[in-house]
Image 1: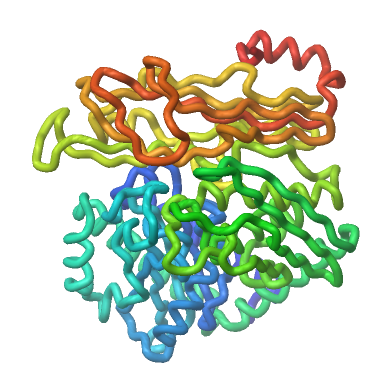
Image 2: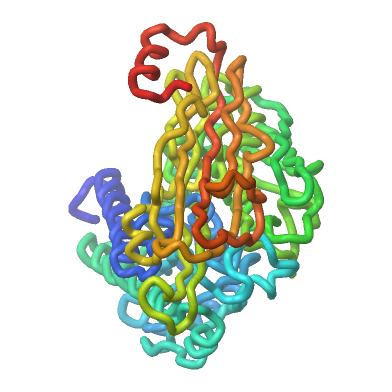
Length: 538
């Protein structure tokens, strides 16, 4: 960068780095086998310095993956130091406590070499539709019932895949081609990242990433500390009741702001439970930081520097810090509620910035059935379709309908699911009136009706919340509508657990609506009439 003004040169290098990680993510989306990655963007991608500190993340991806991946790379380096890595190496794990919170997510970490010298690391994560065991759901009694558990291990050495590891994986999952394909896609997208980073270093004559990394991390940390210092300093507490499994759960947080730092403590939250809705601490940290960052420092890049001023604690053994070997397969059902609790604290410190509560946890339609070895409509299938409820109303705006917050994934394509499995979606429509009333109304949920194309029985693994406890409005706004799961005959299904859809029946999913913001009496008549004309009102 000797020919450029240092400030301009650093900005060019930063912009190029963002382009690199976005190409990494888009590569993964193009070549992944799982529709959840291709269609919904359930992934993360990023580049790290030689110490394992995240420098940049792709815009495409989910905060649970991204912020947990930021910690996972450090765990890989603890097991396999960078000094012992060689060109062509890559390492993988789906350890819920060292990765992104459950066995369905695989993280791959690849060293970036320029010649014989390691200059950084690339990392990526994606969701696998099947990892064996009982399948994706809340039914397991411990993590070993939930699927194949891979500790941090070499995936490739010198560019050659570890065939023993791949054989173990293929033997333990129902769809080995898809799982192996996704794992190879993770390694390939990291290789693209590595090649682009080396190209960036050489084109801009950087030598390595060290100086750029120091600039990125120090600037981001200073920006985040300044943003935190702009808020009132002190402590605020909030809690929320969610459905849980056999009984409701309490999520409780205390946010303390002071000296350009934030601390979040989840003491008082419910104890862990005996089924798979527990949350490993790595995922709790990821979602808590995102909840804070969604309101504070939105223009500051998300990396190790901007995450440094935020610390998170939770008592071991509580629902938000469940240690090994707790069942955690459906950790998102609880974990994606965390940002709403953080926003409850921020609503007291910065009320003008904070939205109402939303549906929050994804409604993942985990559908399976058929017979192994059969063809046509009788073939075996297992799909995870991502669909969403409404977000809470925002300051100055209505909530977003059928939109994922905080996960950030897109709704799954109905056509893609129908092409992958012998299923048919008979209905997909907004739920009129499901958004909570307010000066600004909550986002609407949606209704989906699904059946087997030949009327055969199939299985749904329900992973749903906001069925008993609605998203709450804020500052006088009304609650959003609760969700529901039922058969076409009218029989109400449980919101969590594996259940069979009888032959000839369809299953109807009604996703929750978001809460309203402000007094409903203050909503302009023009907006009320616009909702009525659009068919969004009850």
